[in-house]
Length: 282
Picture 1 (tube, rainbow, N blue to C red):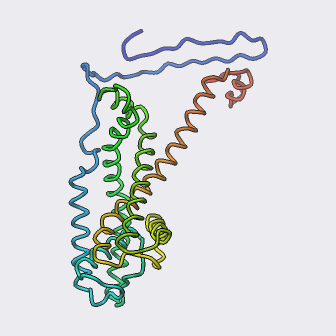
Picture 2 (picture 1 turned 90 degrees about the vertical axis):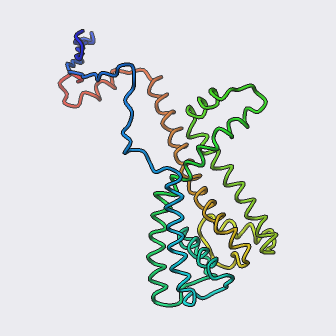
Picture 3 (picture 1 turned 90 degrees about the horizontal axis):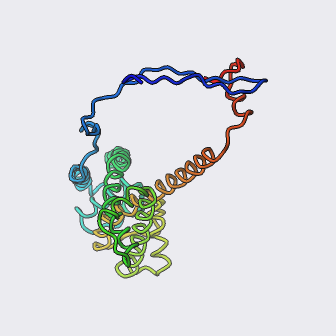
């Protein structure tokens, strides 16, 4: 066989009533690898975690400054002017919207309307990458904990993570959602003085971004906690359902591939593949 070309001979099925032939002659080009594999261009790489933090900090900083200037045009339960502005930014960009702070003037409403769409874009494009970065960092810890009683080296752990990446993404996000749910429930019970059921209810309507508004963070300490907790919990819940769908899809794909590989090709399959009815499958 000459280099760069591949020729397949004619294959004829020896059946008197129907004859299927496959013939292919195509030119293939093979790049000179010199023992190395090609790498994707640098432009395809996503933003670094530090860049994501800088963009997020800039977004929250500008938003907090604007809403602080309009603090007298925002009504509701207030604590500290700058903290309330930052808290209002977070509940707006995550679409939680408790209703404990609401814009009351035309200018404030227009600013909030603009800010919420920018926040949705930031959540989807940037914070999603940050969540993936954090989850990937936690995968090794999760696998190591699962093999805590076994002597498993770092190389074996990394290999297992790469082999079952979607599965461990799902498990890691599930663990983080459970931890954040417990943390939020305990905090609301202790600091905001809510009953346990009310605290858990507030956590659920927050991480699902329902935000009914009957329960929310009203104290200074509660809103400081909420700034970080709401961002982390809402993003982790979104990633959890994303990985759940991805895990289900992967499972279906594997089942289909196994079915195809185990199934014998029959004459009816070949007849069905003969679309132009010339008794030749190309």
